[in-house]
Length: 243
Length: 344
View 1 (cartoon, helix red, strand yellow):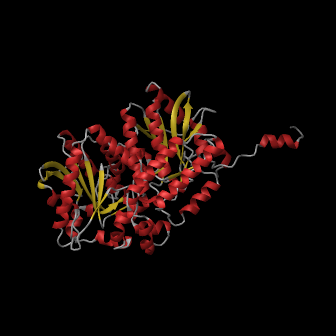
View 2: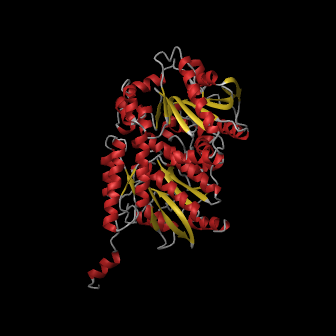
View 3: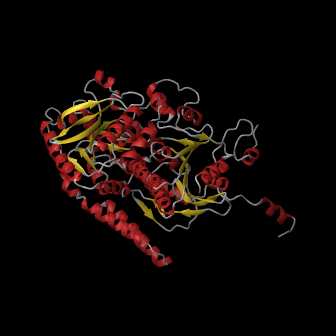
């Protein structure tokens, strides 16, 4: 038996098996950033149902009623006293999918990082590009990747932090373009989802396939950090880059 | 036009806001107005007749037809003396991607495309045009080579998507696509993409970073196949027809959305006698390639950056500078206990 409070008191990690439960954006911010250092940016961009896609407007309105403002929160904060720009994706909004607003906020984050010479940290968790915005959401992959290219050319640091689950168009764009790519233990990270692959190739996938450890083994992730250590690891990396 | 109306509404909201809050949104309003002029430049009426010739679902079917010319046919017919090059210099040679050099009339160019067959055996060999990571890395290698020798790059795209399987994931299909989006955005030579058939999601996108995107009249570009969209969102794969029109995947819709730049008309007998259409495309490409070759590299890269930078539709409203609330505020237990005992 597992007590909720025991897990919650342990940063939502199972004390027996080490499973990292999903936590909310608020909890992530409290965990990663210094107290009272957090400032919201680009909150004024809101979802538009540009294609008049069936049911989309209704769905968005429901989320906004619940006070969830798009699938990413972007802002500025401090990690052990070091200023960073950050984005934390929110799976509670349309599966954390990337549409125009997510693309715009991320692009602006990198543009701000380029002019203000600040490092950017993005915590990814997403189902991929948002179907309801069609090819417009697809183009957000190009837009964010191009902004990161300019950001990198200006000599600034981008740390991509992959958590469970990061798939589809998000993995195939900004999430894989970090100078340093770190992940949470056992997070699902891939392009196609495991169920889709199983249906396509008609065989069962090996255990641990598309998990963080698998990706590190194949050479696509720099390091895996448990939730307890993540803040210190980030601040060490930032310090090493002379921020 | 529905898109400009939506943006006008956003501008109105902003103006109201700036009055009420005495905040300055001039910059935002200017950029939105610029977007409206951009959208207005796309004259949808020009294509009205052609647009109504087929329904989106009919176009999906036409574009998947086996007899339709494939990117490999375009490359061989449009670039003279084409020499194919193989391999990504890292893992293997991906048969699903064809790449090499040749002449566009008298200009040396690098041409890269997905390869598809017209019968089953050939299609099995080339994975139905679905590339592995090494395919995207081959494209990147050849584009870098083109950059060194100042050759323009032409991409011809027709793919259901990137390959979906164990090996593709193991070798980092997402990293390969992301890397292409990243590197091509800054390529120092003119890049052009011609979507000739199915533009399947991320798989097509890996070759769709360009100064100008052309699309054949019956080609499609979509974030997901209509069948996939119908089964996920409408929970019924037979609603694919409805999904095809909702996704706005035809060249006419994408042109209005400012995603693609030009639509190439197809002759009625395009499948059996493609030569005339190829000749027309060659002419159009030659004109644009020679024009873009004259641009200096900074302007070239800036134009490509701005093209993608401006794609995006959103409303703008008051930001109270708070983040999304996904947790209910916890009642303060100590306060409650205190109240029970009469403390304040």
